[in-house]
Length: 480
Image 1 (cartoon, rainbow, N blue to C red):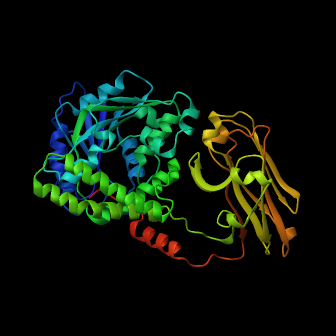
Image 2 (image 1 turned 90 degrees about the vertical axis):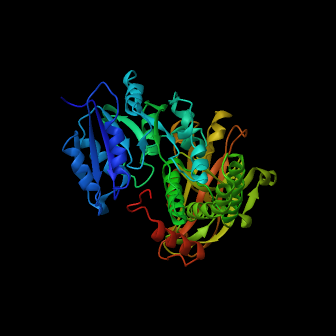
């Protein structure tokens, strides 16, 4: 008989965990048939042998992918396509169902509402977990005892959220989760090296589906991790958060330093509030700065941009600009914010404002920039904003941005060739205008005159960003 559910477990060298995990899975009390798919990606221990032993007496299939071809998204999508069940359950080998109702609670939560695309479980600290493991898990929604159902009523509600709120809103965790095959057919799991669960949840919510958190379905799952694990995890967290949500945790080194001290303060406060032995608390006090330092360093370095071309950066040289009219200086500033999934450094100009630069145009140059309106303005105004670029008072670009959903979903990017001004010094003007100056918040995103025939020089930031990418790159990253 065709199974109603398929449990998918990606593994790599999990002979210390797989036996306990599979025993708990096959010990579930359910009123339907289910199968288990173990997906191995090049184990060198007894993982495959243990799976094959289970397959002789239980409905288990062993699938294999090459280690170099593994990614969290791609591998789960591959296994999902081999599964026979309508309810696809995703588990990791070091997550052990806490009781015999884990599977039933997941499936029951998804059965009665066609709009539900996914459900995920509560996570409990593993027996014998270290104090910092417990503290870190308690901070996350997956430790909460309160159920929740997430849905986007209007698309603009999502795009008006700050990036950090979006990440929390789209919470979903493949440590223990369910996807309906009918939803997966419409919205496949993206080929993400990391955070494939959050990205899939985001895609589903934007398509009108619901995501459910079911704390009555519980697994034991936590792990201490070594220092470099937290560096690598921090790096991947930032890469995923930046790419899919427009979140940059630490835009500058002072932000990272403040984040470090804040993180330590929070950890030490939580450690003091926990019921634990003296030496366990003492161990947490010594570990907290190390974990925080490595994780924040990973996030900071992942957020550094590596310039690929030389140019004159108008944001960096903002102090050299002349602002008109005279009273516009207080309405123009240098900042950064996100539109859609794009975080940009910005010159923010509340209309009416003219920002003038004296620039030398080299051969083969072009002006690159984005334009957008800060999302908060959409709550406070309805009038459009005009953007114009002029060289020596000659307009070379003009467009209007309306207060529409489309303009909430991303920056508008442009590249203007400057060939006819090559070799000249010109006045470059960035102009914003509107009939309504209230909450204008018009952004010129990372405007730069790019010298296409030149490469940027080496810098410490560029070196560190490259080093971090080599050391913490996403290829094959797994939990410890």
